[in-house]
Image (spheres, one colour):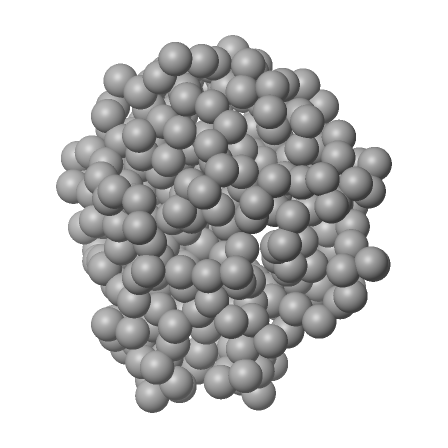
Amino acid sequence: MLKMQSDRTTDAGTFPKVVLIDTISYCNLKCSMCGHKGMKRKRGRMDFNLYCKIIDEIAARDKDIRVWLVFFGEALLLKKDVIYKMIKYAKQQGLTDVVLNSNGNLLDKEMAQVLIEAGLDAIYVGIDSTQPEVYSRIRVGGNYERVVENVIGLIKLKKELKSEKPEVFTQFVVMDENENQVDEFVRFWTNEGAIAKIRPKVSWAGLVQASNLVIPREERWPCYWAMQTMSITNEGKVVLCAVDVDARFVAGDINQQSLYEVWNGRLKEIRQLQTNGQYNLLPFPCNDCLDWQSARADYYDGEEK
């Protein structure tokens, strides 16, 4: 069954619907479709007190806001007790949608147990292939067999512990190298009990080549990432959007401001320009970005209606 998504290009209003937190800004892979390997901003980990400040404000505003404990790094590089503490704190504050994105190489049984016990709501594991040799060209530095074993292990452990969470998604970014594997990927992972997420490639605001971004600029529409999400670096800087990995546009600093203040400051101006179709007035890199056409995905859970 294909899970249809509602329109996501309208202004979220006075507070974002999704907050991405850069708990750690570095990664253990050098994926071909990712701009991380060329990232210039300083790599580091978020101070726990800053993290708590962010979580506390979100909880006070709306406990159902989706909170990603990752923006552009690999969160499983954090120590297991740190990951547990971060997830547990967010859940204790009443947040209902705490999620992680991971490449899955460090998702061993012990880590899986940590995520389940801490109360993580969902995990998205990027795999992008059904063939080890293709995976190795895309997910450079990763191990296909290990990742598959890890994800299946997490699903089995959930069953053993009679836990409904975390919901397990396996992600496939469609590229020239793997586009013929989409159907096989969906079949394999839905049979294993995961939800398959199929999404287009992004350019990370021009940092990597994405030949799929072919819609003419004159047909541009408001970007989901700009309209509904907030991305915060490990140092507390609020950047333009979820693909502004190098913090080329900084809208505010959560060390000095609240999320509400930043969202209703410079980011609101950007949302208004997008709503009005005044894309030529947007700041760099938003003005030249093509990723507005990739801010979407299809989901398959293997069920038939």
